[in-house]
Image 1 (cartoon, helix red, strand yellow):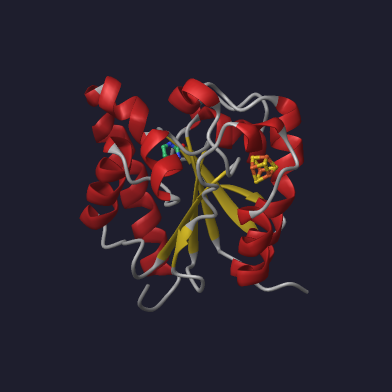
Image 2: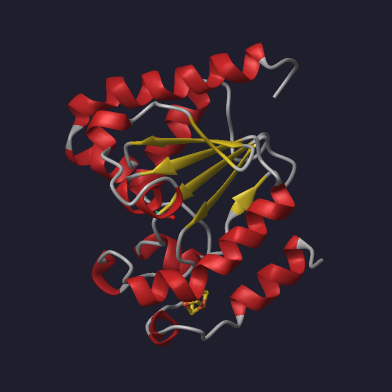
Amino acid sequence: MQNLEQIKEQVLSCAACKLAATRTNPVFGAGDVNARILFVGEGPGEQEDLSGEPFVGRAGKLLDKMLDAVGLSRNENVFITNIVKCRPPGNRDPQPDEVSACIGYLKRQIELINPEYIVCLGRVAAHCLIDPDFRVTKQHGQFIEKDGILYMGTFHPAALLRNPAQKVDALDDLCKLRDRLQDNNTTL
Ligand code: URA
Ligand code: SF4
């Protein structure tokens, strides 16, 4: 089996879909490769495209603050990536052909990181990984088991910037996750 570094090399030179033509840098993902939790967003935005790092713009800053509030950090105990690794122009939703071309990378990241929990940030990730009919406003914070992994959908931090009233619910979702991690033993 390939290791994560080998997959990263492939992503960095990938041209398997039309997003390759407009990206500056692919964004493989970052964090602790031994993490128990994987966070999955939708796709790189402008800052991520420029830097090659996930969630470094305004939404990313909010995500870091929320993770910090529950004792999580991309430097220590979570890994963060996206459904598509290259920026959709103008931050539009990734299109089905782009998702199909890219999803194999995420599947291999999941196999290698082998997380206990996958948190889908927003509708695009939840539709792709949990259920095409997933409704974030109704189903956020629920744990759904699939293939031995517990999935949870919650609000995308960019949506929270537009609608700060939902921050309470989003933080509550992360608290539930923290409580579960603590119940299932040990340090993070
Ligand atoms: N939004 C996402 O979905 N992913 C990022 O990496 C940044 C913003
Ligand atoms: Fe390759 Fe994914 Fe980038 Fe498309 S979005 S070029 S499939 S890495």
